[in-house]
Amino acid sequence: AKYSSKPIDVLNIKTDESALIESADLDESKGPPPKIEIIVDSSGSMGQLLGPFRTRMYFMKKMLTRYMTDQYKEKAQTGLRVYGSKRVGDCSDNELAVPFGEKSLVGIETRVAKLEPVGKTPLFKAVKAAAQDLKSYKGPKAIIVFTDGEDTCGGNPCVDGKEARRDALLDTQIFVVAIGYKPNADDLKKISCMGDTQTAESEGDLFSAMGGIHSKIFSKQINLKVVSPDPTAEVQLFHQVDGAWTYLRSFTAAFGATVPPGKYQVVVNLAPPYKFEEVVIPPKKVVTLTVKGAGFFQVEFMPGHPVLDVEMLDKNMKTVEKFKNDEQKKIPTGKYAVKISKAPFFEKLVPKFDIYPNGTFKYKLTAAGAVQVKSKEMVGLYVYDRRNNILGNYLTNFPFVLAAGEYKIHVNDQCTFPEVAIKDDPKIQMLVCGKKYPAPSKVEVGTDGKVLKPKKKTQLKGQKRERQ
Image 1 (cartoon, rainbow, N blue to C red):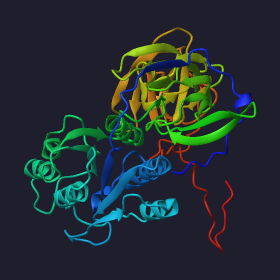
Image 2: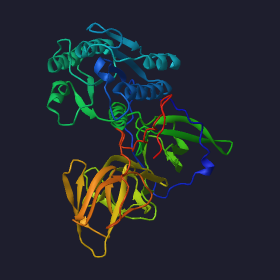
Image 3: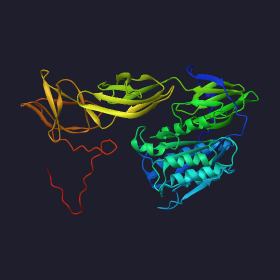
Image 4: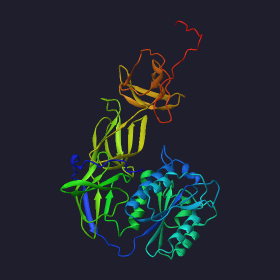
C-alpha cells in the first residue's frame, strides 16, 4: 500500500500527445481547513472477499494507508475511528485509533496494519462519537463512513444520522461508502439515509469513492487533480532545481494534491509510466490532468490460427472493437470487458481489463482447444457433452472451439468419435472419419479454469508390473 517505487527517470519517458491539461478558477478558502474523521468498519464481515482473491479489509487497509499517508504529507486534520477490531460481540468496541494531528507516519501505518475483522457493527455509536470529536472545531467538518453492513447494535441510521449532524452544529457533512453493495440494492437504503452515499465493489471503486469524497471536502484547497484509468496509481511530481528536473513528492491519483504554484513535470506510474511534460499551475487555479491515448491488446490462443472472435465491450457492454485472436489491436485507454467467442460452442467473458496508453497488453486464453473433423464432403456434425447432452451442430472440414473437457462428436453411423478430449493445445486437433483413435486421457479442469496436469501413477512397493 505504500509508495514503493523509486523516482522515475523522466528523461526516458515520452510524452503522449493525447495528454489533456485543463485549468479552472479555484475558489480559495480563507477560513480554517476542513477537519475529517474517518470511521472504518472492522467487524467480522469485512473478512469476506471483495474480488476473487482478497478480502474487503485487505483493500480497505491498502486504501487507508495511502490516504492517511497523503493527508500526513498535506498536514491535514484527519482522524481515524475504528469499530469491531478488537473484541468479538462487543458493541463498545469503538475507538479513535489515530488522533487528529498524529505526528508519526509510522504510528499511522502500524495502527492501520493491525486492523482485523473480528467484532460487531456499532455503526451509529461511532457516528455519534465522531460528531462529538468534531463539535468544537470552528471550520468545515466531515465524517466519512466505510461499512459493509447495517448496525448490529440497535442503532437507527436515519434518526442517528440527523442527531449526529445536529450535535456537530449542523455544518458537518456525512459521507458513506457502502462496501460490497450493488448501487440499487434494497438494503442500501438502511445506511444511505445517513448522508451522501456511494457503493464500492472493487479496489478501484474504493479508491475512486474516497477520491470523489476528498475532492468535495477539499474543493477549495486541491489545485492539482489527476484523472487516471487506474485511480490507485502513484503520481510523482518533479520540479526544477539548478536546471534539472528533480523529484519533489508523490501522491495517489484518486486523491489529488495541493502544491505551490509553479512549473512541474508529472508522471503517473502506470505500465508503462505516463508523463505530462510541462504543467504550469498558476495562482488561484486548479489544474486537471487527464491520462489519454491508446494501448495495444491481443488475445493469445493457438498461434497462426485466427479462430476466435474478440470483442472489447464498454461499461454499457456495447462493442467498441471487434477482431480475431492473435491480432494486435489498438484500443483507446479505458476499462473494458472482453468477450472471446467462437459460435456455436464457445464463449468466455473477461469482466475487467484495463488498457493504459502506450502499453502492450495480452490475455492468454487457456482451458480451451480447437478441433476439426475431416471428411470427403462437407456434412453436418453434432457435439455432445460427457453426459450425452447435445450442445449443438456444426460442419465438417471447419475448425470449432470447445472448452476443455470430454466430448462426443457424431457425424453419421459410419463416423462417430465417442471420446474426444479437449485441452490446451497449440494446434488444431484433426479427426478423420474412418480412422481409429486410442482412448484419450481424462481431462480435469481446476477452479481457476486451467487444465490440471494428470496425476502420476505410483507403483506400490513389492507390486509387480505386468507385461502388456
